[in-house]
Length: 148
Image (cartoon, rainbow, N blue to C red; front, side, top):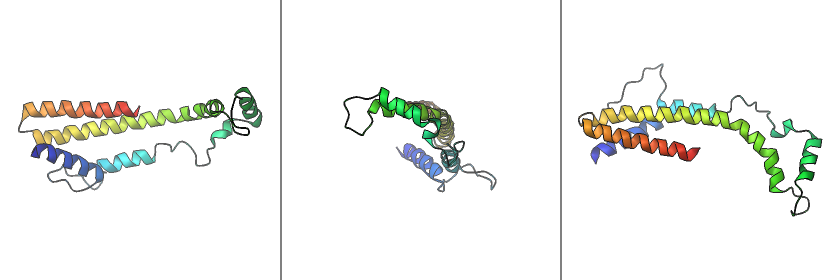
């Protein structure tokens, strides 16, 4: 149980940037894994300018026609959910590619980190190392699948 605790603590501490005993030394030019992942999250939508407006792709006539074509039994003065979705879904689709790209990058970083820490903690027990690697990779894969 102590080995699992060591792995868990090292994994958590590496991602948060805390000290990890017997960790691979990082030179002053290298950035810690947690910082790399956090930086990737900060840059996820860097291609979208701060002045981006999702309504910029639509002119008033298009919005008016969409409102008319999706009229229904809604409260007067409020557009229907179908109208809202028809205007919003194309805009949200633009966010998918950078999101999935970031998800894949972070998944690979986490798998690599888990493999390194598993090797460090369980190196004395090769059979256990294989089993723990399989369990860790499956759990990370399951979590990635849930995010999609």
